[in-house]
Structure formats: structure tokens, C-alpha cells
Length: 130
Image (cartoon, helix red, strand yellow):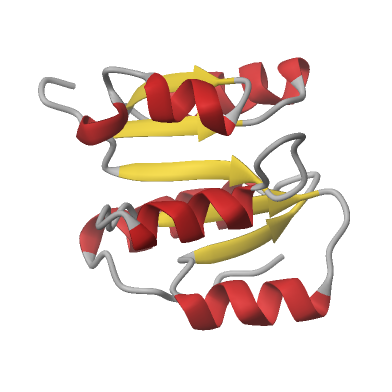
């Protein structure tokens, strides 16, 4: 797909990162995957990212901290958070702060597709939870 939107994945678990990358690429998007928030922020594709999919629990900088950092520095990149350890308080706060979706692992492919469409079409926060 020419000029496909760039989706960046930030996930410290390599097998899950690779499966997300392959799934998102199979949908026709351009995908870059990173093992940490620092790697993503230092990447040349950082500014081109149309949507960010990030793990909530990562060493050094969590997905929530990454989202807050982006907001504080003026980057309004729609974000989808994914977690193996759902926490209602974190979920509620993240969605209130503007995260597009908060999904639990294992991620339902249909929910992820819905969240990607929501993030890319409107760029407005929408609750998508599985």
C-alpha cells in the first residue's frame, strides 16, 4: 500500500512485538517495531508515526509514561496501550488522558483493527477494550 500510515510498536517482549508487527503489516500498514520507549524516541521515524501501539509495563519508561512524555512535548500521536496485567485505575486514567484504546493481552485481532481505524480516522480518543 503506497503511502501507508506508519504504525510504530513499542513492546519489550520480542515474540509479542514480532507478532504485532506481522499482524499490523498484514493489514497494509507500514510498521516499525522498537524494544523500548527510548529506542522509539531516538528513531528517525518518530516524527512520521501516525499511531503508536505500546505495552503498558516496560522497563525504564512505561507506555503510560511514554504517552505523557509525548503529550508534554507537543506530539499528538494517537496511542493504543496493551497490557498483560490490566488495572482498572490505569485504564480509566489513560483513556481520560486521551489514549485511544487500552487492550489486554492476548490481544483480540478484531479489537486491535478497530482501535487502529479509530486512531487513524479521527485521531480522537475512543474507548476500545477487550
